[in-house]
Image (cartoon, rainbow, N blue to C red; front, side, top):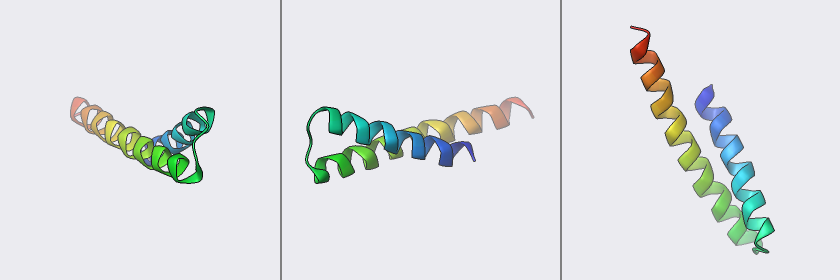
Length: 55
């Protein structure tokens, strides 16, 4: 659940960042995709660390 929320949040942040830099639609899509992947990956590691800490 945390990973999905982080991916959506990353996509929104990436899209807004590209839009602020006056990017074309392809730029906005690329920024959104890359930010979504990065945020999801970080959230995945955080989720794993939380899971291991509770064992």
